[in-house]
Image (cartoon, rainbow over all chains, first blue to last red; front, side):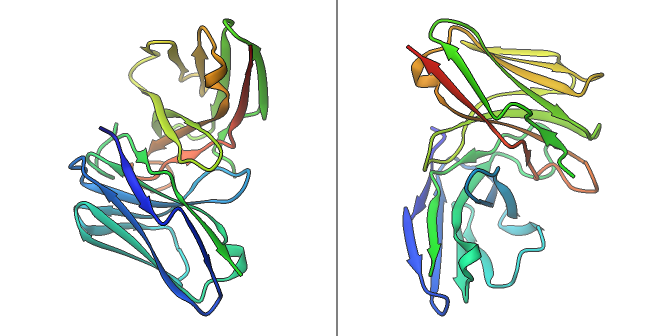
Length: 116
Length: 116
C-alpha cells in the first residue's frame, strides 16, 4: 500500500482567512513533504519533515506554516495568502528521508487551493 | 537554471508501439532518478527509478535507461496502451548545490498521448 491521503480535495479561501491542509500516511514512512504545483509547471518543494522534525525549508514565506504532529500526519497552515498562492498543494512521504540516497517519494492526490 | 530538462513537451504514439520519453540533467551530483506519471487533478504516481550505479532498470512494460556520461535518461514503455496517456515527469535527487537527498528536482513534463 503506497497511499497518501490529503484533505480537503478543494479549498477556496479569502486573503484574510486562516485554513489548514492535512496529509496522512500509514506506511510507516519517516519523512513527509509539501510541494506546490502551478498549472503546467513541475512540482516545487516547500518543506521536508524527517522523523517529525523540520529538515528542509525552501525559503517559503511565513504565511505558510507546516506542522508535523506525529509521524503519520502533516499539516500546512495557511494565513493571509495572496491570489498568486493559488495552486495544487501536494503532500508526499518516503521511507527514510533526506539522508537516504535512493529514497522514493510517494505523492497524495493534492489539494486544489484557490485564493480570492 | 533548469537542472532537469524534458525537451519534448508532447509525444504521440500508436497503441502497441514503443513510447520513448527523454530527460537530460546538468548537475553531475544527481545520482538517483525517478519517473512519475500524472493525470490531471491528481498527484504524481511513482513509476520506476534508477540509481547512478546502474544503467538500466526494468519493471514490466517500463524500462529506464541511464547514460551518465551524456547526463541523459530515457523511459521506454512497450507496448504502449491508451491508459498510459498522461503527463510524465522525470525527477532527480542528489547532493546537488548543497542540498540533501530529500529534494526532488523535476523536469517540465512530457504529455504522452497513446492513440487506439
